[in-house]
Amino acid sequence: QKEVEQNSGPLSVPEGAIASLNCTYSDRGSQSFFWYRQYSGKSPELIMSIYSNGDKEDGRFTAQLNKASQYVSLLIRDSQPSDSATYLCAGGSYQLTFGKGTKLSVIP
Amino acid sequence: GAGVSQSPRYKVAKRGQDVALRCDPISGHVSLFWYQQALGQGPEFLTYFQNEAQLDKSGLPSDRFFAERPEGSVSTLKIQRTQQEDSAVYLCASSSRGQPQHFGDGTRLSIL
Image (tube, rainbow over all chains, first blue to last red; front, side):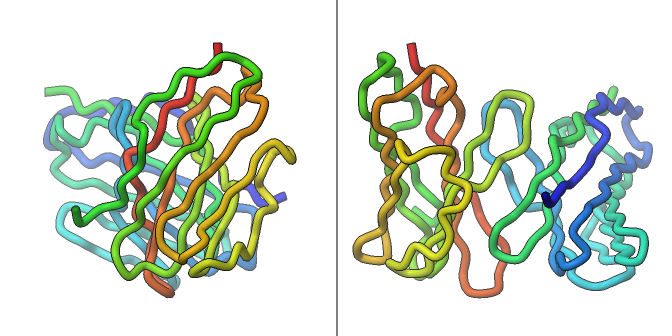
């Protein structure tokens, strides 16, 4: 059974701070990992994809992958109230396995 | 439009009725996926198409669930004899080969 585990939160950070979201996965065969942002009542929106060990940066977002530890993380720098949402971690090739999501609240 | 389009956005049905949910993927995307998302949970995989071929239907919860994509573009997810536990948001996603999946806004299904 492939599993992706996330802390459900809520995670509260003040505006301007760094938000750190973490995820572990069970399937060592997974090659691709994704972070999706989901606002309440909306569809998941792709934020980051990462395929190899190390860091990948895109604007205020940095994804980190450690395949040996089966660990994926997402850092959001200079957090804004508009970043308040549920962040879903997913892994897999074509069939994605999602975590339950971490609810992030950025407090103005 | 440029994104994945799903219809209807909301569907209310009585227990025992059949429902059909439609997905219109991003133009040119060969891969199409259906997921089911219960309240407070992450999406769960239902089935996967590459063009018109259904390559994986391992996530369909019962034989009441059926999906098709006859011309390799629009897909329909059909649920027969609906039950209350079928109430969820049904998400469709599409992708180009080897690229990340992009999701539609989903259909919120409520079974009374």
